[in-house]
Image 1 (cartoon, rainbow, N blue to C red):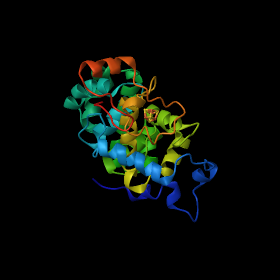
Image 2 (cartoon, rainbow, N blue to C red):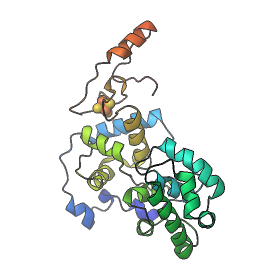
Image 3 (cartoon, rainbow, N blue to C red):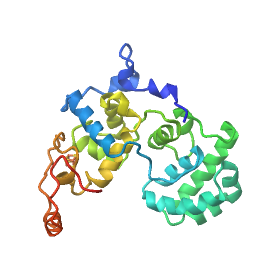
Image 4 (spheres, protein in one colour):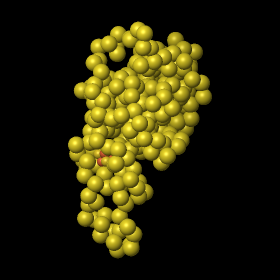
Length: 268
Ligand code: SF4
């Protein structure tokens, strides 16, 4: 997997002599966590899932790009269902154009905003062929110039397809960063910049996968499952509540199994 060098230097604290315009605009926040605590959090998340992967199915940078474009306001499971059929017919920009907008609509009509998404998939396929020889560019500006591709999609593609240490801030990461007071921010960009500043270098490449998985399966939106969270002793969320819910106590008692303590976790 190729590494996109130019994105490694995009990390705000990688250039202490001259801060970039974007990082100068965002004031440094008072840190709630020490460096050791942040390292501890990522050590634990990494130990649980040493080689995290996106849950979207893809076989090339192009199919990843299309899957991520389709995933806006849709679940990964729903997107995978649609792309199983779509990618069997069209897994390159050329084949996508042969299939045409109506054909794409037919394959993806089970997911939200399918008409607009089909239009974008066709338009981005055209642009890739016209301007990039049918390849997905490894450059943020070129990616963001494609129809239907914003900063978050570009970050996912740069990270997952090309190994760049980018962090795509989705709803889970935005919630976690603010709830844990790890990288608070009012906008996804603020959160992204702060995470890029605080995540220790060895964990940067996979940080976004670990945070998404933790947000999706443990630190859930409605009720975080602190009682089985592997980072509960390090977490400084004001919402933290490690009391197990009654149902979990009853279930574990009937199985004769001890309820997980704050630094342990049962299966997701
Ligand atoms: S302790 Fe609770 S709030 Fe903190 S990370 Fe774990 S699940 Fe989220």
